[in-house]
Amino acid sequence: MSAPQEALEYVRANRERYLSELKEFVNIPSISTLDEYKADVQRAAEWVAGQLRSLGMNNVQIMPTAGHPVVYGEWMRAGKSAPTIMIYGHYDVQPVDPIELWTSDPFRAEVRGDYLFGRGTSDMKGQVVASLKAVEAIVRTTGLPVNIKWLVEGEEEIGSEHLGDFIKEHKKMLACDYCLNPDAGMIAPDKPTITTGLRGLAYFELKVYGPDKDLHSGLFGGTIHNPAQALIELVAGMHDKNGKITLPGFYDKVRKLGRKEREDFKRLPVTNREIIQMTGVPALWGEPQFIPAERVGGRPTLEVNGLLSGFTGQGSKTVLPAWAMAKISCRLVPDQTPEETEKQLRAYLKKNAPKTIKWELKNLHNAGAALTETNSAGVQALAQALQTVWGKRPYFKREGGSIGSVVLLQKYVGADSLLSGFGLPDDNVHSPNERMNLPTWYKGIEAFTHFFYNF
Image (cartoon, rainbow, N blue to C red; front, top):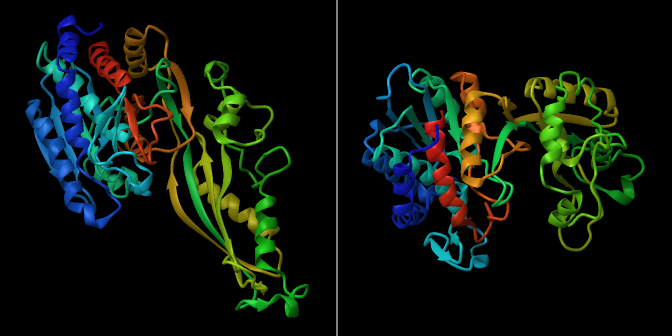
């Protein structure tokens, strides 16, 4: 069933207060990666906890981790037979550098036209407040028809470093049927979106060594194998001319895309021309048998994220470098694992690295892939809510990136995440002048209100 009219009227009558409270939240400079903002990060956690208490949530706690705390709260009054929804969010934000490119104070939220500007407006304080205010509208009118738990962390912008240990330790407390995670966003203001899949990640540092020190390239060039050249050749060989990855066994467990999935990918309203205009490249690249949306959401990748070797300062210095380094990341799809990917990369290097150099591979970061079926009860309840508000069937897409909480909750709690949200591609997330489209945000609060009744 959809939300009763009285709950929707409550949302509409309280828009100005909702916006005012969001501004309060945004004005807290909760930058998780910088030690000098530790007190502000704590203050943001206290702000969230205060909101939960004002809604009458029970067992509200600011729970410590080895880093920044997790805010927890619950409403379990709907009964054991009612489903339980967890609402995930994060209250930390990215640094604001370069500050000179901001047109207003990043921690003094400012409305200009249809947008609210400030760090965290879109990612993801606006989404957290949308969830809070949808629940408020229901609590203040009809009462919640489902049980709710809240998990709001303070380390998402630094990789959710301690969230895994927290979830593992408290998995009984966090038990739920689904997790509503509004950190995924929409394709466009008129295109409601549900993200049904996330790629995993295996991130490596590859270092190639040659001589024990930098050498004079005139004296030793042509006799000593240059580590930079050797590294470049190794990296270049990791793809064939069609963009297929050449690591042995890399595609053995890649799940094939089904007919319905490929139809959903084709329905996504993003053209090749728009991607070219968005990125500034002269032409697209990749496996020709898959459209770009499939390459990003449904296929694994291997990318070079950084290269470093030798002299890179101003002017010239004719050295043959002692070493060269590449940062390499693989985005993984369901059924692939970071552990197997590391074995495949090592097998490639053992086979292809010349005997004239030595190499070292470090695994820096791993995350698993996640997939939620579009015909599940949670996805259908959310899809119906979005369709009610926007008047059109939502778009289903797989995201190319990774969100640590999604995989952790699936692994330790057994709960799939419902990924949506109301941020837009041009919100300048992580960049100067971050903003959020307010008309879309207000509609999002109503959609979440519908969702809880639908479920």
